[in-house]
Image 1 (cartoon, rainbow, N blue to C red):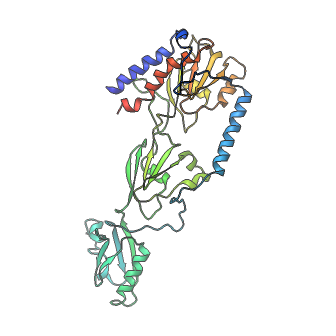
Image 2: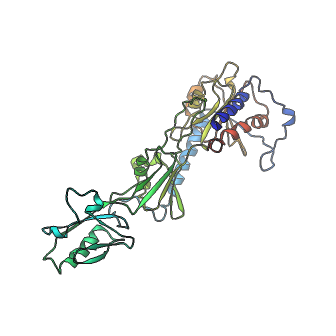
Image 3: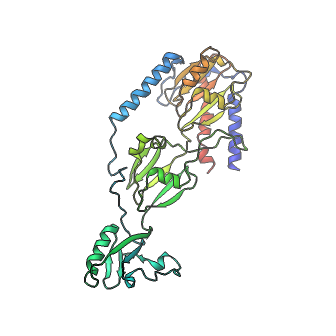
Length: 381
């Protein structure tokens, strides 16, 4: 019921933002202030080839700076070489002493009901009880270390014992994966290194981003794969799943440890809004963190009959010190420019019926719509 009420309210607000004429009382808004008490008089930048090149250079510089200033977070590693599982309480061990079946796992027969019947379960104190030897501390050790301990102790009873130790059930350690994944899960840590990508995959993968509408006409939220949080011992680092999927990104595909929490956030704060004189106004999902102006207009089914595409605006950072960009969609190179102009999270694409003289008036009208749309996660809980 809450979702239906939200959809109806949002539809009404979006319709208001696309109504003919965009009737606004500009006289009462000429001195609108932003959150810092400053009059908002944004400069309008024309979307042209020079601006596209400038944006691309700025992006390359940002990426270069990020690479130069990158520091690997302390306590995290992506190296698989040398990884060994550490035995813990409630793990189940299988122990075999060759040519000495009386020393092998208890009830090691085909009729055993479960692995707990045929293995040695590590107790709460981290010990197992082994024939002849008695209590043996195994928690906090690797299988190689346990094998060495048993071999040494059994030598007093068995001539040149040959011992093999494997973990049959990994019960002592796990990580949690929550958020915008198909199946939030508790994933066990095993003798195979568990990476961030492995864990997300075991949870069914992130909720994919599309822009198909549901029965209420709303575009469903999806995963923001660029800001996946990995929390360990009170410290949180962020990874980009898109980057991890590339060969170069494997250096941040961290090997997880017991108690780690992976949170894949939804994209509530990284959507694009298309408003004004369009056929299907609303919020739309960036796909893999990307969307061009052309794609945004396509998602909104293009300008409507009352629009003037010569006044296609992009409003960035609308809540504070907004930046305004203008594309003349009637121009010969408009299609190319729109396909190259990369949008950023929370950008607002606004097609007007005419040239906008007072952006304060426009912002005053669309802000309630945007604030309502970004509150969806609270209204639908």
